[in-house]
Amino acid sequence: MRILENWQSQMRTHFLQRMLRQLDVRRKPISFADAQSVCILFDATNPKVRDQVLPFINQIKETKPRVTSVGYFDYKQDVSGFSFKAINKNDLDWLGRPKTNVIDTYANNTFDFLICIYDESCLPLEYLAALSRAHFRVGPYTENTYCYDLMIDNQGKGIKHYLKEVDFYLNKIIQTHESKFIQRNRGRFSNSNAKRQS
Image 1 (cartoon, one colour):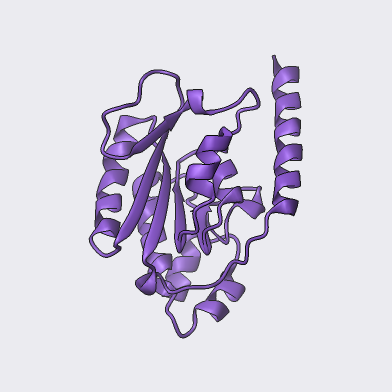
Image 2 (cartoon, rainbow, N blue to C red):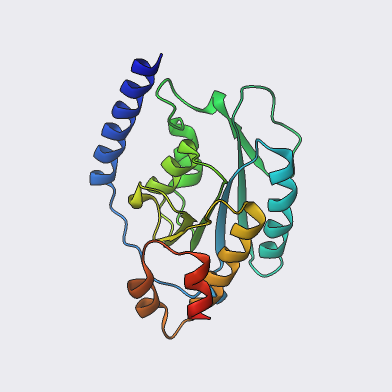
């Protein structure tokens, strides 16, 4: 079983790298205050996590005219009836990659910001983030650095803490200085960094 999983992981990475080489996307810094469209991808498998994420989504909706929220459920049971768009394991191919229709719907749209929310590694969401045409992508720290333009190291402190960090850094990106901020801070962040920069 482990041999099969390792092989699937290698194949998934191989195909993703090939798609990334063909991807023609020009990222551009933008102030979150000026953003008009936001896509929020989150792991919706755990009900407790959903309860923490949904108020954050509603908060974003209060200030942004176009907000798309997509929850991923790590099982194959029915996921209809939620207030957000939902995908599950039925929307993945045999390598664990989001199917083409999912990529076309969410990754191929040019959002101003893409925000990924999950407590532990979530490969389907990382895959979508990597291929996203969003101008700026924010997500948890991962070794797959091609997924995000801004990574936040949550240090295992849970979703509630992570959402506070996301809010903190989004508000640090202001229109006049966002380009310098992004270049200076691109990569890994931690709570201690947040305190030093505030």
